[in-house]
Image 1 (cartoon, rainbow, N blue to C red):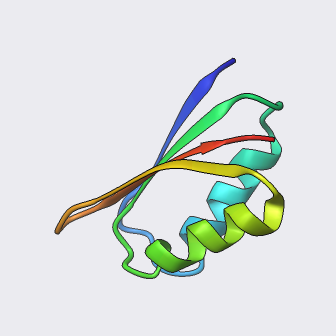
Image 2: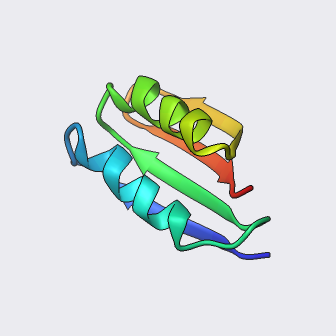
Length: 74
């Protein structure tokens, strides 16, 4: 299992979700993707993308500056 870090800070919708989807598709089952984003729409878009792709969102951390998501590829 690998853990990939993807820093998408500064990118605006729809780029964070598009880049996260591309990164997830390159992973194998069981790998983890950690996504860091600053676009507020990522709070909605990334969990929706994870659900649509059939992967698992295992952690979501939000503070005033950024959102961090940990996703497991299924």
